[in-house]
Every structure is written in structure tokens, then in C-alpha cells.
Image (cartoon, rainbow, N blue to C red; front, side, top):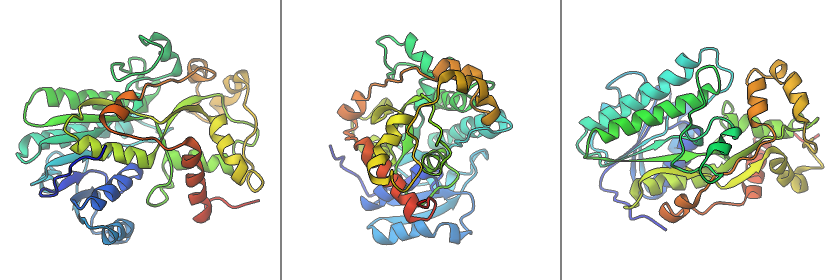
Length: 355
């Protein structure tokens, strides 16, 4: 399912230097679009070279604009004349010291600032917001209260808070803010993409992303004693980028859309790497007992709270991705391709070194 893309108007991508945004920018440029990319400081051109290289390699055009998520009106210049807005910028970090300041405020206020600017920009006809499956669930135990034993677009996260799963809480509040602003007008359409855990090779290494950190830890010995029995959803960043583009241009794209290729777990993720990399890297081969995580988890990592362990470890995670296939035309790569391509990128860049 390939959308017909109108290249007569530019499109806006917020947070263009991010892991997901890089792949979205790449696909938009490949389609011949003019991309208005917001970054914190466009004068620091050395940090943007990899994106200008993308533009040089594709028929589209890339223009940079400075913008601040929490500054009202800062997206006006970048959005001027744009037909579709891709709002991707949002913090994703664990172990923050002040979740209200570091997660909730930039997520909610950033969404409000971008969408209120869309209200003031007559050329905008569609806004695609990168939400998350975190806005659908907080802990794996939430699966027990779903109507059919699976997470769907109709389900909202009601169990997260500033004190527990603050990132999930921030994504929930931000998406609700987006729908509230959308529902108060009738000129532009909102489509949200709700990815599960994003993995796969980026257009460059994003060393601070949780995706990078997790994959690196699978190969650097961090999990040599075993991985947690944590079931999650995984989606390839390249498939997620396709979902964004299709959400922006397919006529029937609408509402919330779970973007998740695989219901999997850390043990299965590591196993996909074993044939190709098992002899050279200390890949985990065991699963840690739940009681051990409950005992020592809080001392090893502040995010591994006993509440998290009791509510998520050893419990299934199942999401229904049928809407993304039927309405956004997403075809998901095999998990082994995602994991091996990502791991190889870390090896090629010297992040992971064979023993």
C-alpha cells in the first residue's frame, strides 16, 4: 500500500535529529518532499551533517529551523506553508531525577505548542503525532483488564503516574492533549502512531537512546548472567518510519494506530543474535528468576522497582497490530533482521568489540 504523496507543499518534522525522526526524514526525502526539520540550534551544522548527507542522496530538499518544544510560537516559521506536520520530538529516558520537568512538561507542552500552531497555520491539513504503546498500557499486568486479552487502540493507560512509569504517564498525557486540541477544531486531521519498543539501525548511532543502550547491553556483557523475563513489543525503526509516512498521506489513515511487529521478550531477542554473533560476544543465554530481580533490581537500576517487577516480569505482552497492516499498509520485518542489522551497526561503528 503506497500512498500518493503531494510534493507541492513542504512537510514539517519536529525533533529531526532523533532516532525515529532520522528514518522518517530519510523516507520523506526519498519521496521528493521538501522537509522543514526543527532542531534546537541549526547553527551547529557539524551535528547536522548526517542529515544533509541524506538530502544530498535523495531527490527531496531539507531545510533546518530552530525550535524549542516548551516555547510557544517557536514552530511558526518552520510550519509556514506545510501541508503535513510530523510531531516526533519527545523525551525518552529512564531514571530521570525530575519526571515532571524532564518528561511530562516537554511532552505535554511540546504537543500543545505544535498543535496550537497547526490551528494557526491554514496550510496544515494533517498532523501525525508520535505517541507510544506506553499510552495504551503501563505494566504488563494491565493486559488482564483488556476486553480480549490484547492491547488495542481502544485501550488507554490508566495505571501510570509521576511516581510509577513516569515516561508512560507523559506519553499518555501528551496524546490526550493532542486529541483534545484536535477535537476542538475541524480543519486538520490527527493521526497518532503508537509504537512499541523501537529497535533497528538508525541513520546514525544515537548513543543516548534507550534502544541503543539496550542492544549494546545484550552484547557487552551487561546481561551475561541473564536477562529479565520481560515480554515486550518490538518494532523496527524503518517500519515505524513507513508507518509515519503512510499516516501522513494515506486518505483513510485515522485515529490511533499500534505499530508493533512482534510480541516478544528479551530472551527471544538475544536468541536471534546467537547464530551470527554468539561466538564473538557474551550474549545472554539465561533468564533471571523473578525473585532475584525483586530482591536486587532496585539496587542495580532505579527503574527496576519492586512494583514494576511484580506487575510486569514473567507476564505476557500481546498487542493487536491488525489496524496498522490493514489501514496503514505496514509490513513488518522479521525480528531477526531488526536485531542483527542493529547489532551489526554497533559492531561496524566500533561500539561493540568482539572478545
